[in-house]
Length: 114
Image 1 (cartoon, one colour):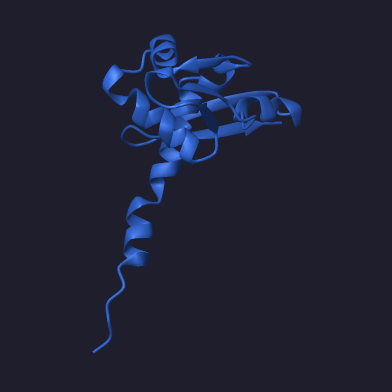
Image 2 (image 1 turned 90 degrees about the vertical axis):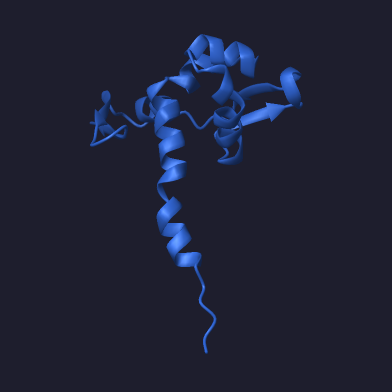
């Protein structure tokens, strides 16, 4: 009998997670608000209005995806941009307008216009 491999099912079932984290960061305007600064999770969370319970998970997910850097660990760890700012990129390549379009449920799609 063949061994069942759930890899494809799991990849499909969890495939939206990374995009949801990124779109949430864009919705918060996180990358623009961090700018050239580095901030602790407490500072960044307070500025964005992110609930304290979800701050480390959210910011560390962005680190794991390569959208933020974290220098240090624990409460003293500081988050900074990697340069992967979607809104700034849109402006650099000539898009004149950027919108988040609400979709069904708590989702949104990023759309840029020339």
